[in-house]
Each structure stands twice: as structure tokens, then as C-alpha cells.
Image (tube, rainbow, N blue to C red):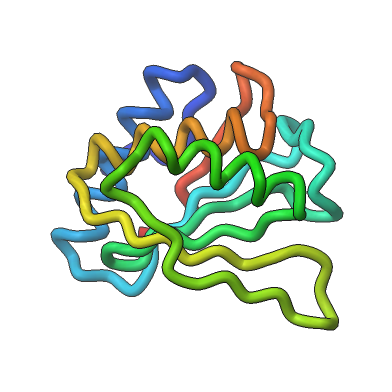
Length: 132
């Protein structure tokens, strides 16, 4: 991969799919997608949203409202399911672990929709793949 950021939906989908494929091909520990702080329009806290792919699992932190939207989105991805929800007492929100047994393009589509629908980011948000 030679590019690590994207700011349009088609560019992000391509970036996320390429990164997911590279992550799996390399059997790396984690692939991380971060939202550029200047693009963060979510109300999730001090840090912009992020999503990680760990093998066949997607990991993301959610507020209660975001978790409700995530559950709604998963209804459109029947091959994805929540495996674990962890809500530490010292943290606000929930860490969701989702099994995502699907191809890189489907994973990319889920990540894009999660940023737009779960975190409610604007259409022109900029994302970075910061780890593969």
C-alpha cells in the first residue's frame, strides 16, 4: 500500500478494503483506522472515533447512543455479530467486539457505514489507516 488516508467515500472504501486485505495477508496483529481530528463531528469524547480489525473481529468503542445505532447497522450485515460488549466502570461507553467473517470489501463497507451512521460523521470525513 502506498496511500494511507482518504476523504471521499469511494477512496475510503478502496483504502479500507486494501488495508483489510493487507492485514489478513500479513497476518498482522491489528489494522487501525482513525478519523482525522479535523474531520471529527462526533460527540464521542476527547478522541476521534477509531475502528480496528483484528483477524476476523472488528473492535470499536461506543457511547450508549452509538451502540444503539451499531446494533441497527448490524441488522444489515447478517454475517457480522456482536461477540462481546465490555463496559468498564472507569470508562464512559462500551467496547464492542464484532465477528466479521467476510471478505475485505464487505468489511470495508461496514467500516465506512459505521463511521457515517454509528459515529454520524459528515460525508467528507478524512480517515487514516494508522496500522496494518
